[in-house]
Image (cartoon, rainbow, N blue to C red; front, side):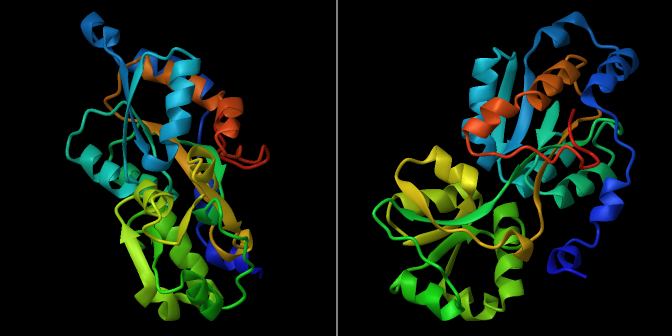
Amino acid sequence: MSRKQALAPRAAIRNSRAMTSIRSLITALCTSVALATPIWAEPVTIFAASSLKTALDQVIETHSLDAVPVYGGSAAIARQITQGAEADIVILAHTDWMDWLAMQGTLHPQSRCNLLSNALVIAALNDALENDFQTADDLIAALNGGRLALGQMRSVPAGQYARAYLSNMGWLEVVRPHLAETSNVRLALALVARGETPLGFVYASDVAAEPRVRVVFTPDPDAYPAIRYPMAITANARAKSAAVAKVLAGANEVFAEQGFNAVPAQEVGRCE
């Protein structure tokens, strides 16, 4: 068994779930949800992971979508939705949090799909040199007395992926005293961009969105679970949410310009 297979034991279970395309969902949702005209006239509210901000803003503008984005950490978003936040579409940065939302009964059962993929990188200011970290001591030495910024390892997806990488490399406990955890990945990025921390674990898309930083190290993607951004329509969503979700599913070109990758075409559960 490969290391990647060992890291993602639930992948086969997730991929075996019945998922319909956004195109098929439009008819089902519009038929099953009867909404008044004033509600239809209101913009669709999209709750999205912080790492999507630059790209999703661009998609909304490019396609003139009647939608309002609300950004935050995936864990915080999931909790807000279960507490009654009025979200029509939700896009998270980790499948576990979408699994949790599904168990709470807050999602339209046929709407979930994987919208995007991403990669974990270590970023630094533009004048920093690339590095090939072979040991935890190499990483600590590069910090030069500073800290390594990353999202909270228990709840922020980018932090969870970083923790998986550090754990599987056998570095976590050695590096732990040198970490600076943040409530979302964009805050970790900001610490690096402002020079408050010399290095930070962020997504490749975050580096594309911040001109003050560059990638100095790219972890082996086999050393952490595949990064997927699941999207779903909430159970109480406006009927036109399905049409907006369809546009998002077809906006790969704009997302790619902002550093995101498409989900492999052969992967079950991919948004279509």
